[in-house]
Length: 128
Image (cartoon, rainbow, N blue to C red; front, side, top):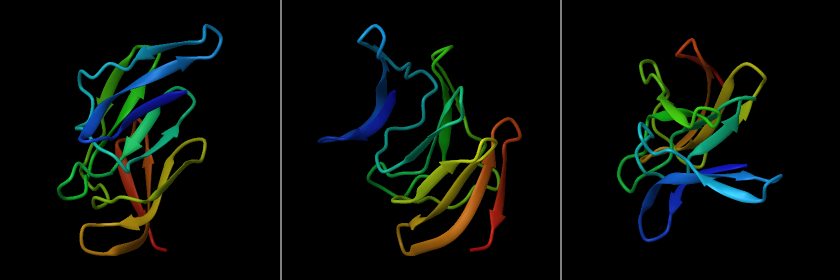
C-alpha cells in the first residue's frame, strides 16, 4: 500500500509505503515529487502509482506524477494537452491507461472524461 499527500493544518507532498510481510513502513522519496496537495486521485498501474489533480489551497492543480516504489523515484506528468485542474474527480486504471472523469474546478462542476497513457505522455479527451 502506498499513501501520498493529504491535508492536516497544511498540505503534504510526502507519504509512505507499507510492507505487509515485514509489517513496516518506508518513506516515499520527495525529490521530484509533485507539489503538496489533497483531493487528488491515484491509480496503481501494476508497477507505478499515478496521481493527478487536487488542490493546494489555491486554484485546482493541473499536474501529477508517476511514483515507482521499486526505484523510489518520481516522474512528473507532461501537462501539455492535460485536462483542466480539478478536485473530487474519479480515476480508474484500465490496464493500459488512467481514465479521469468529472469532478469540480474552481468555478464549476465538470462532466468530462480524459485518458492518460504512461510512456506516451498523451491526454485524449473523450466526450461525456
